[in-house]
Image 1 (spheres, rainbow, N blue to C red):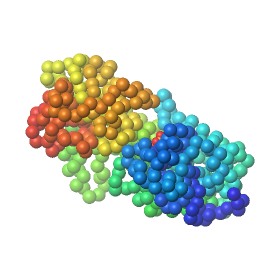
Image 2: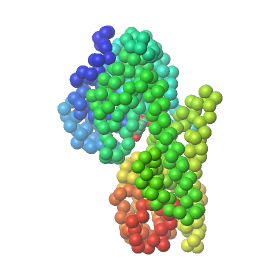
Image 3: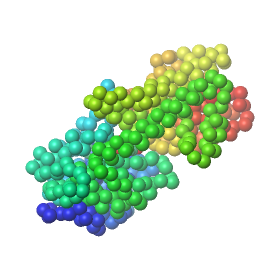
Image 4: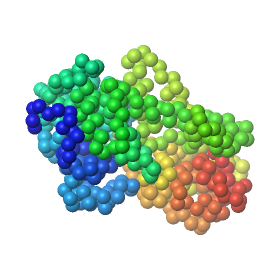
Amino acid sequence: MPTDRRPEFFKGAQLKVGIMGCGYVGLPLALRFAEAGHRVTGFDTDPDKVRMLNAGKSYIEHIQQTKIQQYVNSRHFGATTDFEKLKEVDAIIICVPTPLNEYREPDLSYVEDTAKAIQPNLQRGQLVVLESTTYPGTTEELLLPILEKSGWKCPIASGPTNENVPGDFFLAFSPEREDPGNKQFGLAQIPKVVGGVNPPSGRAAQALYAQVVSRVVPVSSTRAAEMAKLLENIFRCVNIALVNELKLLCLRMGVDVWEVIEAASSKPFGFMPFYPGPGLGGHCIPVDPFYLSWKAREYDFATRFIELAGEVNTGMPYHVVDSLAEALNQHKKSLKGSKVLILGVAYKKDVDDLRESPTLKIMEILKKRGAEFDYNDPYFPQLHKMRHYDYSDMKSVPLNAETLAKYDAVLIATDHTGYDYAAIVDAAKLVVDTRNATRRVLRHRDKIVPC
Ligand SMILES: NC(=O)c1ccc[n+]([C@@H]2O[C@H](COP(=O)([O-])OP(=O)(O)OC[C@H]3O[C@@H](n4cnc5c(N)ncnc54)[C@H](O)[C@@H]3O)[C@@H](O)[C@H]2O)c1
């Protein structure tokens, strides 16, 4: 690597880009860099994923196999578990998981392990960018000290006097904003916030990302970029909690919350619709806010909105099961011993992602309360062992009139587009709908219980 590499270098064509973590975030990013003509190496600790990628296969439903094949064949993309190859790349982008541990505290072990894997291979002039969602301070307080053990330095600096502060490598944070399954906004259309540990690092990362996204939004520090991502997700989490709470009130008052949201959405300014559901799901919204509330404690600060939203949202799966029990009660049946078919394990419609899905929690509560249950989900023919749950013995049951009629109740947990809701209501004895999926069904409305 040249010793005098300038940030402008990253405006260049045919860069060598290493992506650490080829998951929901890393893989699309890798393919986008390949599409822009760069040589991309995906680094992952999972040898099965690496094998599949190099064979041109996809393990994420919405990522086309043909795209992977195309870039593997043109040698713009390949994957490896050999981290020594990090030495050969110009830029390293870290997209590894940032979950919560069993005490709902940040688990930064993946970021830490990644930093430790980069450190012995770090080269002068390389750019390292963290994309994993995390609390403000992670890049400077966790990543930087590990990388600097290499002997190379990247000083923390800001302001006009530090525009050209010298450093051995560049370090930045740029949060990922992917929305799985969103056909309107793909990676290339979504603006990217970028903050550097110092101004040259910021400029280097801006130059790199400007090649693959429509707009780069520079901020003055890695902390601002880290906080911006958390603000986006906390905004969603708090608003979903608000609408979930209002739903509970509307149900009690006999008001249709969906009609209310639609009416309020006609306001052309100052309102944005959020929709109630069976609970929070997905990798980000149920997890990320707690990164900030944890960090806030270091500053003797209580993040009350986050805690309150968490309380409301975590209560939703319990509300769903209570509503189901009440609906069965109206049919002179107890929840214990009743047969329930759950539609949808994915955390939202039309995705093959069940991380933190509220359905998993609903299943746990149903089991504790003695209900018998099966599920159907076209995206999950069978379930596997997860961090908190083990439903590895469960398979999606076929969805037809004969099967539907066997259950005491059908619970719509995820409103996949492919479901024929009219046919489901026709065949089922009772339908508990957490998503307003049956709004257009005209027949047998007496069987439908909004929840
Ligand atoms: N999925 C989303 O929609 C989304 C959206 C925005 C932000 N994020 C954030 O992006 C980050 C990554 O999330 P994801 O959904 O892509 O996770 P993921 O679990 O889909 O993928 C992570 C990948 O990293 C690999 N990995 C783990 N440890 C590694 C290591 N030490 N070195 C190399 N590879 C390693 C795993 O094998 C896996 O393939 C998280 O911080 C998440 O919060 C995710």
